[in-house]
Amino acid sequence: MTSQPTGLVAILRGVTPADAVDVAQAIFDAGFDAVEVPYNSPDPLESIRRIRAAGPPGRRMGAGTVLTPDGVRRAADAGASLIVSPNTRADVVAETVRLGLASYPGAATPTEAFTALDAGARAIKLFPSTAIGTDGMRAWASVLPPGTELVPVGGVDASNLADWAGAGAAGAGVGTSLYRPGDRPEVVGARAAELVRIWHTDVRSTP
Image 1 (cartoon, rainbow, N blue to C red):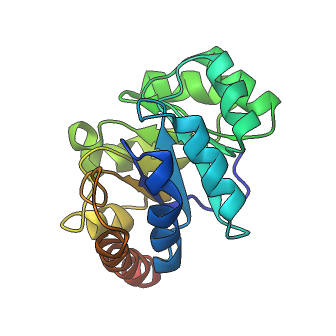
Image 2 (cartoon, rainbow, N blue to C red):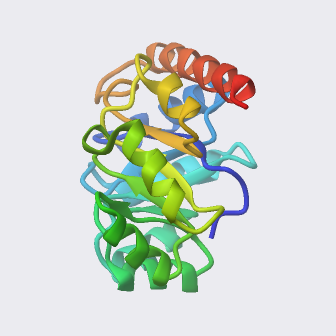
C-alpha cells in the first residue's frame, strides 16, 4: 500500500553488491525517491540489504522482477518496502499487502490492472509503457478507481519523462537510460539529476 506518491524509481538491473551502495547513494543524492534491485541481478538480496543499511532515512528500497510469494517474503526480510513485478499475480500482490509493503504489479491491459487492484494493489506498473503510451494511460485512468497510481516502466528516459508527467503519471521507473552495470556512480548521479529536474519541473507545471 502506498502512503506517498511513487515519484522516480531507479531500476538497478545488474548491479553487484560491491557497487550497489555507491550507485544508490549517487541516485538518492540526486533526488530520486526510490531504488529497485531486480531479482535477475547478481546476489540481489545482498545488494538490497547493503543499500537499506546505508540509508539515507526516508528513501525507499525496492525489489524487482518478483514473481512468487516466497520472493516477496525474501525481499521483505532483506529490507525491501516496494515489491515490483513484470506481471500480475494475485497471490504475489496479496502477500505483499499482507506484509504491509507497497505492491507494483506489472499490467499491460486494463483487465490485468483490475485483477491487481482486486488483489489489494493501489498502484499499477504500466509495462511495457512503450506499448501503452500516454494516451493509453489516460484512458486507463478514466476507468480505474480514483487514486490508483499509474507508473510507466520500460522505455522511460529523459526524452519522454516530461510527457509521462504531463499525462498524470504518479511516478516512473527508469532503467537502462539511467544505469548499466559498470557505470560509475558520478555518471549515474548526473543522469539522475537531469531526470529529477525534468520530473519536478513538469509536475509543478501540470494543472
